[in-house]
Image (cartoon, rainbow, N blue to C red; front, side, top):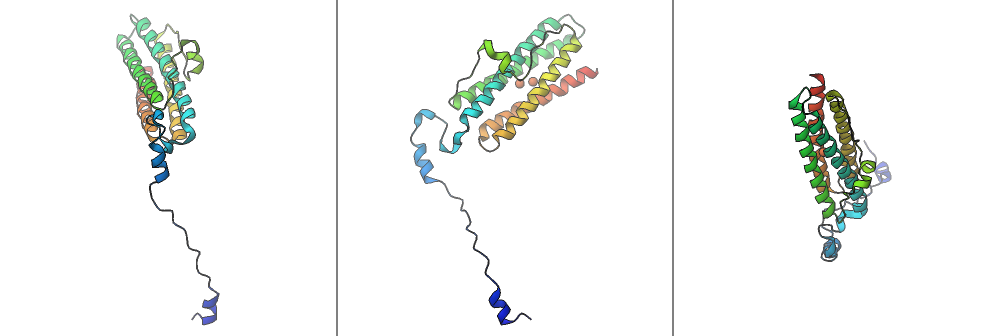
Length: 190
Ligand SMILES: [Fe+2]
Ligand SMILES: [Fe+2]
């Protein structure tokens, strides 16, 4: 049995100050100002410049991918597999749609989408390719898709919960790139 003396030595646990779930009224008030920032409100934090840079590098990557797939589409015509040449065009159009979505998000974040052809290849994560052989084209595209998958995966981790709209966009595009890579891998095995 615990004696009265022993009980006297037991210190009460410190009270944990629970953080309550409540709206930050000062930030709401701040959101009523800075109207020139459009969709960007105080909650966004100091990340917009970094996110815009990441998105612009991906925009360059998508544009280079459009050019590479288009070149492969037109030069692969007449080669062994017209079906694959047609699929190169399907991919080119999907990469172009990705580029549009990235550019739109860059503008929403107050940035400028960089379409400058001079620096496109330097800023792109993926390379261009001038292969003449169908198999070499498929390999070049698979490498580019894998580079895109790696870069989008890293960006999703970097953006995390800092910008859920951008993260959802990146997750969406990542799913398409994974599908592209799967198709290319299958064509390589045929
Ligand atoms: Fe893409
Ligand atoms: Fe792709």
